[in-house]
Amino acid sequence: MGIFNGSFNPDVDKLESEGDMGGLIRTLQKGNNKNRAKAARALGRFKEENVVKALIGALNHDDADVRWNAASSLGKIGNPDAVPFLLKTLRDEKWYVRLQTADALGEIGDERALLPLLESLKDEKIRNNVAIALGHLGDSRAVDHLIDGLNDDDFSFRSASEEALGMIGDEKAVPILIEALKDDNVSVRRHAAGALGMIGDERAIKPLLDAVDDEKWYVRLQVEEAIQELNARLKKNEK
Image (cartoon, rainbow, N blue to C red; front, side):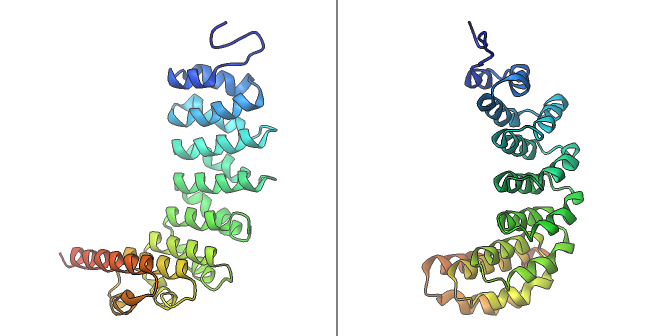
């Protein structure tokens, strides 16, 4: 019967390997839920407008896996036309769909996502990914909110907030990141060092040098890399 049989059960893997965009779109729109989800994932390799439209339509599908994969592919494609629709999906009933949507909004990097993502920092199921998405946006208006995250009891959220602050690169975060080099949690110390290296502020040189003797080898390694990156950034700025 070929790729499509009488019950519309396409061989999605074959469609993907052949780069059959039309077949994948048709599957996304008419296949069973399993194949719709697979087609949504496979369509992330194409950037054509009709693909974007089909994936946007799939954000409203009843099956959460279809919505999850559609959001993922829209993030990979990076077309800002999808942003208003992804912002609606950021309130999806399923937390893992919301999480993938936050990732997608970060990948696209459109400033329209800033305020909705800041609001989603209250969503404990996805806030680590939201913080990273804000880092990808690179908007300094998120800095104060991420700094607040460094006071949270959850070490993973503190670490994610630090990573995002490093991505944004605002020097306002340097003092609290320096303090975090002495945090009780090793992940927080490691991410603080990485963020300070990315920001490249000379105030971090001595605290990083003091942290070279950290008890954990992987923190020491991150500190050494941060010092190298910081010095490289300072030399670049001197030119």
